[in-house]
Image (cartoon, one colour):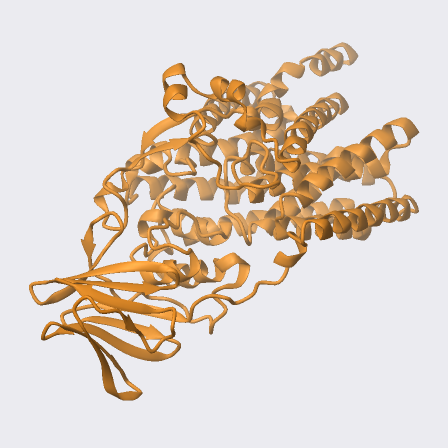
Length: 573
């Protein structure tokens, strides 16, 4: 038996799928050119060829990892039935996968659901891979050495992130160096795109190799949770100092993502640590953390409070509520007042419900609208140009009916948009409230089967040009995600799939609470760290979406945590 156990412990290579997700997947950055297929819609340009650096190849890499992990898992479950762990907790995930498949079959865009699309590339295959890798980690993680190897992978990717993030803090992004760009694209592509592919975030925002500072913050939070626990529980002084420095470094990177949700997630991690694990060593950790936070606030002060000024949303949005076009003209609702803009007898006329006398200007003359001095309009020929919310919108009269002409030159109507009235709070969460107010009415249409993986953009009311002018700063902005993982899942894979995910999360938290509550000693520190990491991910899901930059790590950590919980329960017996 001892020989067999030693042989099994020597087979670390079956951990490769897990290690690839933790330590290699974040490195995959490669230029891809693809067509999103949105040119068929009025709200998108006729040119739908796009570039992607961060998701396209990650998705295919994860598909391959998922396939190999699935094959290994099948053989393991068949050959080592006596070692198979109870799979009851994964029943909700199994049902979830069924509805992912059904949503793909009946998708509004089957090709997108099968292959992935538009800045996400979370196809049904990727969603299946998440589930497989979680079960794989749950079944494979068995010996102490397995957890140590995972820990080394966590240290490795954290150090890599510290290097990349450090350059970004000092505004020397490695992605801007030509020699790095040559590694990320073919020679022909480099000649065309080098220096022209700009990241969405500038300054000293940390986004690592994960495209978006919010995604970087979520990934760093999960790593921080594990490193933080390892630091607090480490007895060797040299290692404790090393882990402490690593945890501090990761926290600094989290700070410079300027993500509010990520900072709250760090606080949740610390609070849960206190609840689950009470020891004197925590006081030292909190004191060191407090000093670090004070130092970072000082740095933020030198940057005109770039971070802390974002903590409270300010409602500086234009009170433009809606715009509708029909045969009468352009109906504008602005600050609870209804206006009508139209052409009559070679004049531009604006009427308001509360005013008896309409405004009127001749062709070519500029009209200052009663909405405010910054809102103006004039017409020339059959076109009306309206300047509102720092955008110029073009309208055209054809055959006695008024239409909106997009910035791409497409002619379309502006129609009433179904929404939930948030009573002026749409601006909250960097205008996440606006997106949620438009998503909530859609939920009733996808109670059983969703629109399909990666099809959110195609069912969101993109024709809400007035709303996007106010809350996205431009009418052609494509809202590709719900900025709430739970709402996005409901839309794309259905309400039942959403319930399955929530049930799994609830069971996960419950199992961990039963195993770790009031523990004086953690028999598996890495597992406990992964457990806290997963809870922080669940919290950030309220404000962010599932992505290839964060979700693979979560699902692997969930499997590791559940495997660790079994160990904790065995020691408790």
